Length: 102
Image (tube, rainbow, N blue to C red):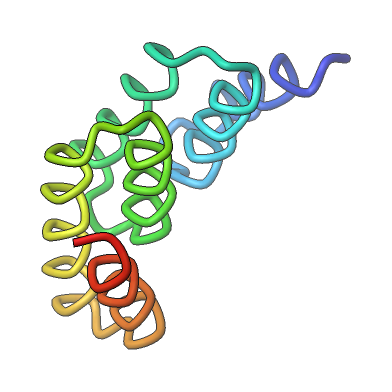
């Protein structure tokens, strides 16, 4: 079974597990599916705002495709959510990303 299909099956089995959506977004990014990856990262933030890894990966992708204004927004949201969640390592990484890019 193809990796993407495997992940989609995992989503069907566990629709409330953000990790599976995150994996699919990364897979779409890897395949070059710009719209699909952005849509899925956006869905992740809306449905699972406390799933912190999304923010770094999404912002990194947006920077890669030169969507700097959108990346700023995502980093700011990520910093806010990481602070709420008390995830110090993620907070540090998001702040570093901000400092390196803006």
